[in-house]
Length: 143
Image 1 (spheres, one colour):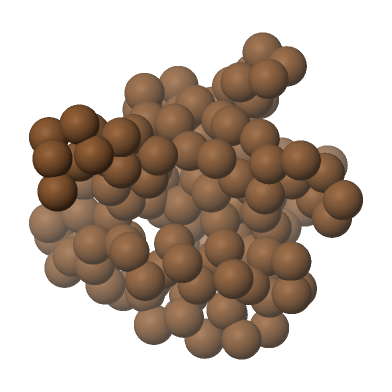
Image 2: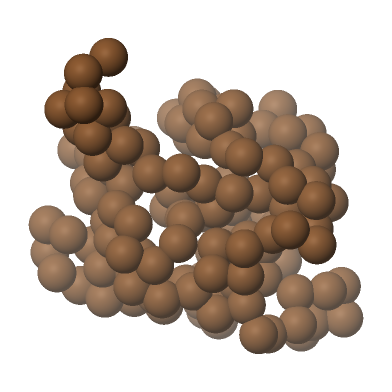
């Protein structure tokens, strides 16, 4: 692979990291994902670097992270919290990891960009992560 091919590939699919304590549960979830998200979700999980929790980069998005991103085509900036499906609540900005946007944000770091499949019927879109905040409580007691 030439240097240019490697750069192009790196730009299209940024490195993502997932803590080991969440990985198995995420893999199990992929079996119940809606068909239009399942392939994308599986691809993201298969290319993720799974690391022990103690080695997880706190700048990376995980379940419980507050992520600010920009929808590149529209320029709209939004902040959401990545959540397990049963804790998702759009009214409070908690987005399920099993949605296309949730799957796209998982494991991302600030300034990384990725293409994500828009909801059914929409053209693929590109987003850029602006900030990741992991200071909130992501444990089961979180409201």
